[in-house]
Image (cartoon, rainbow, N blue to C red; front, side, top):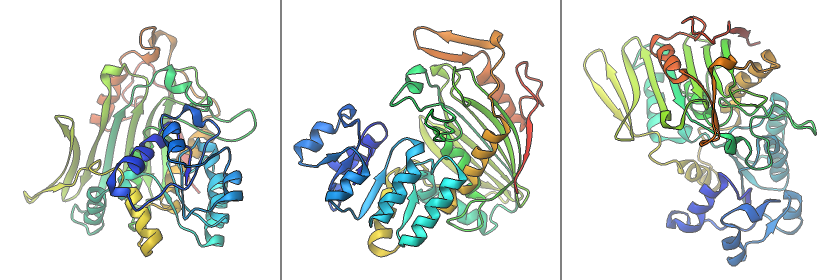
Amino acid sequence: MMVGIGGFAEVYLRELLHNPRWKQLQIVGAVDPYAERSRFSRELSDRKVPIYQTVEEFYEKQKAELAIIVTPIYLHARQAEYCMEHGSHVFCEKPLCATLEDAEDMIAARNRTDRKLAVGFQWSFSEGILKLKQDIGKGLYGRIHRIRTIVYFPRNLDYYHRGSGWAGRRRLGTGEWILDSVASNAAAHYLHNMLFLTGKQEDRSAEPESMEAEIYRANPIEMFDTCALRIRVLDGTELLFYATHAVPKEQERPPEIIIEGEKGEVTLQYEEGREILTGCLVDGRRIKYERPGADDMRKLACMEAAVRENAPLSCVLETTLPHLKCICALAESFPETPMFSEKFIRYSEKDRQYTCAGLGDALNTCWREGKLPWEMRIAWAQKPHDLSFP
């Protein structure tokens, strides 16, 4: 069953309906109150796949072995719990949910129903990332001192006005928490990935101990479109994360990563648009890992194996909790998001986009130097908030 058939859910539908790889999987039903907005709505109807308004309506008439949930953040917890309570295993797209309380409820429902629940951070199912994590865990690179990640995903007002209008929101008028931001949604994979790589077990991520945080917005939103974070995890590793939506579209920059260890370094770079994930050891050895994005749908194959063969899952609910803790800590520490100084904000009528002048160069300098904007005395920077975790 597909819960949600618009937006990113269309990536799943394209695979499930048209890729022979998934011929053994059958979509028995779909749930989406805005089904007519999906480009696959007519095709599902032509294939006699019933479409319901709610998960409650679906389970009144049908059953499903697996529910794939690709809906707005604030719906994840309730829908996942309901699907598990009614016999379905659940694959939930990232992010997991909006609050730690929701996460606790999802854990309780999973344990109570003995269903499987995985989360769609696809890099955590990537063969290349998993092999790198194993090598880090074996000590191949020695103690990891620091990981630096930078990513620019330009987004305009169409992005923030899509769907039912939940993007960039802190909370809905009806009370549901969302906490949608560049760090919790579009670039969430890469913040989570640093925590994941430094986790001590395959299906666990490192726990944050403290965080220095700068967040900003150029857009008229409640949450933030730009962040610079320094996170220290319990073993002392420093994680630096720079992400923004507020650069011009021609400055789009896929994630670049530098992992610094005692015995070597790992980099994720790009050549002709293709990811190159390489380890360089101090003894001269070079290790080339599978591209993290080589098979973004491996996550679904892993979920199928877990359901049919009880195979282990590398990204379960607990794997994603450290990322969620960081997002919730940011929301609590910044009840209102600082705006960039007005003199730096630009608006393009042509692109329908708000940007911050010079932001791309400034964050790149910070990433290269391993500093936060405040430490680099960037003109618009504000002193970071110091956060600690219980």
